[in-house]
Length: 221
Image 1: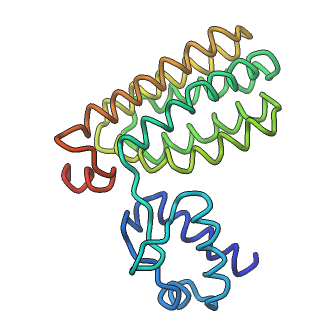
Image 2: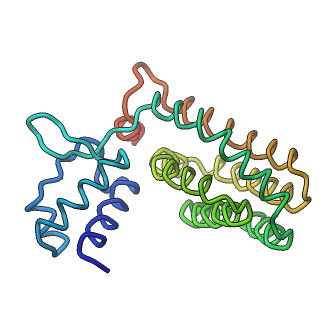
C-alpha cells in the first residue's frame, strides 16, 4: 500500500469511528509521526479527506475534522432514501435470491444481540450485496460516498440495544423483500427502515440547537 493510501485509510477510519472528533486539528507533522510516514503522503491524504467532506480548511487553524450537524443528516437522507430505494428495486430484479435469504437468516440471528459492531458489519455486507446485485456502478459510487458520512451518525445507536434489535428486524425484512423478487416491496422495506433511522437520530439528538453529532454524543454520555 502506498504511503498516501495508508495515511488516508487510517485517518478516514479514525474520523468515521469517532476517534478523531469534529474540530480536531490535523497537523501534518504530528499525523506523519503518528502514522509513520512522511509529510507529503499526509498532505495528499488531507486533500482526499477534504474532497470527501470529512475534513476542511479552517482559517487560522489549518486542516480540521469536519462536523456533522443534524441538518447535514437531514440533507443526506434526502438523497439517501431515493438512491437506496432504487438500489433495492434493482437488486430485487437482478439479484440472486439465495444471497439475500442467507443474509435474512443472519439478521434473525443477531436481532437479540447487543453487539453494535456485529450488527454494523452485517449491515455493511447487506449494502455490498445490494450494490453488487443492482449492477449500476454510478449508483454504487454515489452510495459509497454518502455512506462515509452516515456511518458517523449511525454510531449513536450503539447506546440503544432496542434500536439495534429493531434495525436488525428491518434489515431482515429488506433482505426477504429483495429475495422475493418484488421491486416495490423491496423499495418500501428500505424506505421504512431509513425513515425510522432518521426519526431515531433526530429524536434522540434534537435538544435545543442543532449542533454536531459529536457534540450531541458528548452531551448524552
